[in-house]
Image (tube, rainbow, N blue to C red):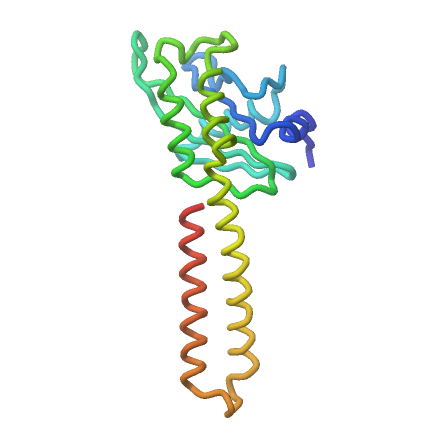
Length: 205
């Protein structure tokens, strides 16, 4: 398995890595800027860009041994350019952290759209700094996603415990007369609720 020491090291000092790219009609997938700056690094960010623009999906997730990358792709009509230009951002986080929901990715996109259109394709470092700072303030200093992630993690753990307990009773005590049918019906109802709650969290993830 290929390791990515620069990515791993960067995630040791920053809660995320955020990269911005677009599809150039002549050069293909191109990376514009990355926070924190990693220097010259072709893998895996450039490969993620290539894979992103080779799929029709707007939301893509890539899993690596130590981290994962979530990508959102969207078209923009820029002044002076014929046709739409495809942009994307890549959010990279430690593999131990839950993935961000679509709502959070859309918030990142909204902040991206605050970058002046005239500056979107400028390669100069620093153009995207206000965007990166906004993401950091919103999702780290204000800890927006963390309460939801921690809530989801703890609730899922409790649901799993209840679900396992219900399945154990239904499997091992179904044919014992001392447990009444009403109790079985109640346990089956609890188990069904566990499944429904798990599905809700899967949809929010």
